[in-house]
Image (tube, rainbow, N blue to C red; front, side, top):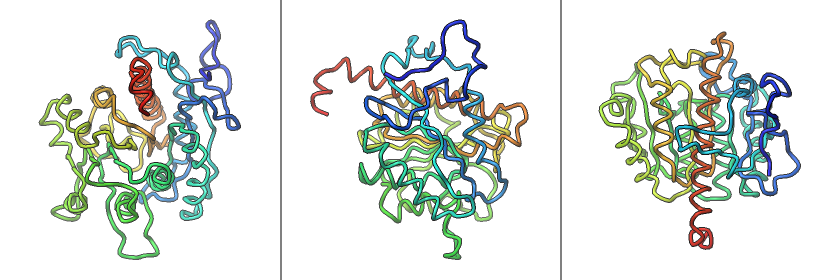
Length: 326
């Protein structure tokens, strides 16, 4: 069973910078539950570049994260999960389609071994090859999408089809995301059109703006998310600009009036039990945040996601009937 390679008494700042000091393993995926994977690609951005350095920044700021989550009944995720840091995928800066093909190909063995990919971006356009790889195993995916932008735009120029603002409309067009069992949460910000979210809703997405979410209790939101996705395979995607810029200044397209890190924690913990088959956290741009707040929050949000995966595994181990029916 793979777990962090850090011993009691050894300084947390020592050693190679893998996520949470996990062993760096690429050639053995047997008995692995999750793999942390960097996707250092930012050719899809529309404004500020630099998210290619997001994976390394997140790993750096994960060094003090331990395995026990006190908020979840002192759950030790490594009592239930075996995990590795798989390193970074090979990408080709400046070549979007070539990079997408490479990303999808490299993720194929991850899904083939029933390993949950925990992907560190990179700009949000990388979610498209992530979803393509997932859909080859699971069929159409349900998307749970935390973001301040719906990313369902369309380019009028077919030569500019791919960007970090178009990937989910493309995913719907390709039939790899089922919008009718998907939900987008946290949209806000100024717009060049009067009805910026109508295209996403017309596609079938449930879309909740920041104002919608702020008007309800978080427990109601998480119930709504779980009802929306039901037991379908879910890809969870988290853009750090979902957080208010106070909590995530290091991102390329920040929008004021967002959520606190604690609110994000509550939302993630509240959706424990969903059938999560993949996760990515995107748009960390460390050069815009010399205090590393954004990367620190991204690392800890990733740990919360690992915690609910561990909760799911614990529940299955405690229910042999559920295991035998899988």
